[in-house]
Image (cartoon, rainbow, N blue to C red; front, side):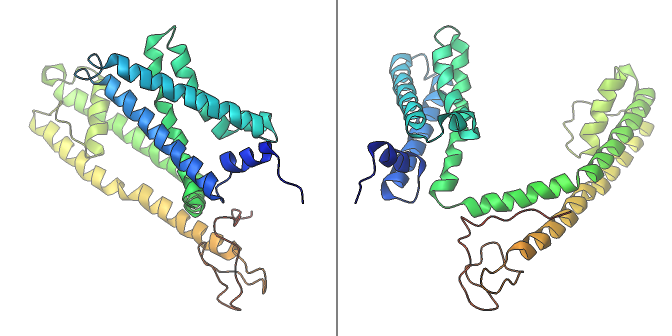
Length: 281
């Protein structure tokens, strides 16, 4: 019986999550990432950063050295180093260590290291949350399917705020703070979205009437994109459910997190390893 090589064992620990060592490595890595982000936050606080600049800087250098070693080890043990380096996580891992080195010449670049937060996405693999990534893919596909309707909706809203902005500019004028049509369009956007900052307020009765109409219209149109996305999401979830089939009886219609077939009782594929494609068309 041949024993796995050191390179292979290292690969299983660093890239794998099915072993205790692999899970421990990823959890330790996530703790290190969060700790380095805390250092970034503390360094940006005026009452803490200047006072503790040297200790915080030493911690930052230590974390950067740790992440650099980890990145090099990933390149070393990966079967396809180039594929890893150009993958999403590979690019993020590289960007996580570059800011500290760039900060030697451009000090302000050190705060770009906040991109390390993206590396916490590895927790999805560690804690078996891949099934939630599949659910997020359903939402993404729903948004893509509704993109034309959403584009038409936002185009209509853009026309409306332009019209209302021009009207309020004519009615109120510069003397009441509406100094230009772009400024008035900004007021229309703030009003129609029911945000209401209050930095621009109509003073004339006609202007107040137009503002009331704009606010009522805003409440009316808020439900439109929700309805569009909900309809597409319902269709996509139905399609997604139909595509999860039992490997034994080949019957569809199972939930994405189902463990056993509701028809024959056979065990389905692990939801974390299950691959479900989008709706065919």
